[in-house]
Length: 79
Image (cartoon, rainbow, N blue to C red; front, side):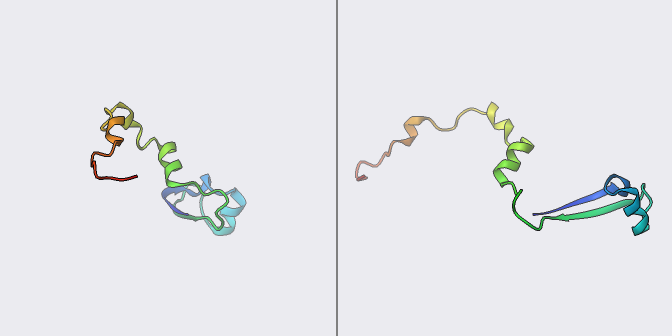
């Protein structure tokens, strides 16, 4: 998975010795691209939606279908 953090202070990401080695001031604004190299801790899109509460608003919506909608309406349909 690949994620980009557009604007963050370098001092929030790295210890002081690493900043010195890289020649970065702690308050320097940087863009960081994070890319995982393994999939051990990957989360699914569904888990991201749950964690981000992307579809929580649907709990307030009325149900569009009832259980009776599950019944096949075509009498010629053979199971």
